[in-house]
Image (cartoon, rainbow, N blue to C red; front, side, top):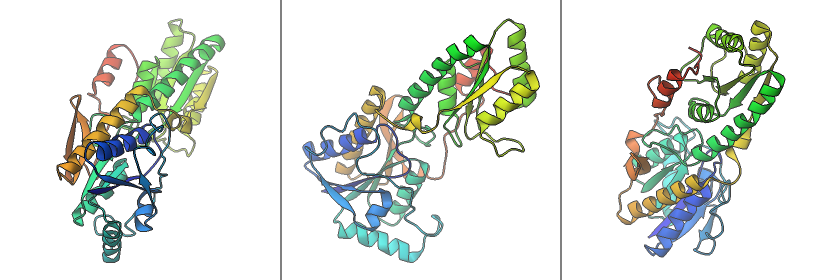
Length: 338
């Protein structure tokens, strides 16, 4: 069998470990031919490929980013629910001209939706979920999340010393457009006093009252962790800047903001993400060998498994008020701004 591997969407720690997991399993255990498709789905359309061998897949386990490159370009110019007939024919033509028996698509929500659409065109595909946001539906965790949480937690840890030394409120903005998983986990692990998530919203009065109460209790500083995707009422500012300004204005306490940004997405993957990517990649190769296409590999109840792409496409895995870590945080007196 001949398989192609592509990576799509934003970069993420652990992609190379996953490429390696797929490729080395396919080559060494199943005797497959493996090619890498460069720069996402656009590489499929332009047949921009490289051969992947056991040797070329060595030495990439600990590398950040992706050796195949990535892009956010959509393969369908029209709406994904009803793609242009010309798009469909071009995609199928490129797939068959490359002689593929299966295409492995490593990516987040948008990628998995596109992968499902390719399966609807009759192509053999397997999806592997990746995103630091941890918001892909159908899996309990995605690789890249652990690394991002480690980086974000380290940043919060470092803010404690500055905040306590200067008796300040420190607001740190973390990644997460629609989902607050990084902010929730890093906020809890880093000892944030207030954690603000896109899914839960906020009440500014609750935030201000919490900070004032802490000061009245003799606690000289507060740490506020906020997800970048939280909706700001009546302002176009970044969340960190908005909350820092409002907190200082309404409490009189010196407040500073930090935006961690793309640092969360780059660099060496954590051991946990290397292992997860390796296991997911190996399971993808097994699915191909068994000709079980149209599925996404997943980690469910601490086991490596897989789910139909039809159950994943177009859905998000989000934090809810009954998420165990939110419930536990509230029991401990941590405010979620509501």
